[in-house]
Image (cartoon, rainbow, N blue to C red):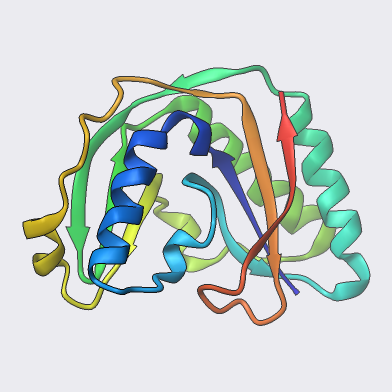
Length: 174
């Protein structure tokens, strides 16, 4: 089983969600990036044995539920390869949480840090399009908020780890 951990931002980005939905209908896409709430990932998807998945969730839940609310700031919209995302400004809080999750998962469950976790870019994926330059012509992104408040987290899972197969298992409100 594959698990994934993120900051839930859906409730604060409703205007953006509406625009993404409009563009998706316009281009008749079923982008797997949009099957989940708008979020900023904290930990790259990682594989755990089914037998210990609930224990991993419990440890992660315990850590996240002890955190206090804080703010993060969108920096800019970027297109890299086929991904279009909102890059978040560097944040001590996000970096500390990411590092703590890496340690918990590695020390308690023997899951090594993924190569992408070593130089993590905190971002919110908007589209995973094969031709993002076409999207830029029809995408009218609303002005991004200056600050977003982190007040809930997501733990999700997938059997295969493939894009579009993840579901939200639980939301942890702090």
